Length: 253
Image 1 (cartoon, helix red, strand yellow):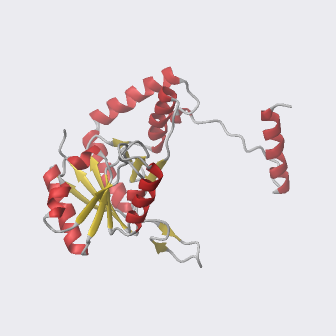
Image 2 (image 1 turned 90 degrees about the vertical axis):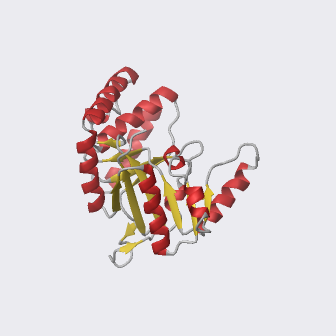
Image 3 (image 1 turned 30 degrees about the vertical axis):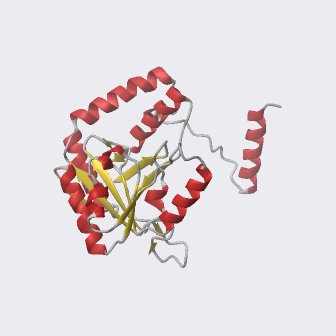
């Protein structure tokens, strides 16, 4: 008996136990590219990136509206310097004493270390030092610091216009904990990082997987953490940041 047969029998037994004999199999939508091979996906990626470039102003505008609707506190600025000033002002306003940043390249352009040092505010870069060794020890140290840090600052890999979501992929030098553990999250977004839809994100992720054979975890963040599990009462910050800020930067590299 094949593995597929065992799986089908198992699923049928679950459906029968639930009183649902209808097959749950669904065709994978073409638009996601999840059923396609590498040549087809690569062709679609070229189309997506051409559309992103051609429509970047409109996509940036659409994303701003969606992000606001999803609960992000959005500020749109022309330059990296303006973005850094926004973060500095937010830290002053909230009385933040410690902050942590990811290793996203965009944050290097903000020169936050120097700015926050002048305010006597500690800024930790969450990135593993391969020269030091003891990765598990470093991971625990970063986790402890993130739990006791007032604000986490990240870049993004993509944002999604239709949902107002920020997408952060786990990769070398970039930990998702910066966006998950501190009570306040600030995400810096550049024009040109906006995909139209979740389907387009799936195509881009499918391309990465087929090209490298590896696929990392990804966070899709749509506003502050919310839960209504207890007495159907909406609570913010139950499983992540209770306050999220988005800084949209017009400047191009």
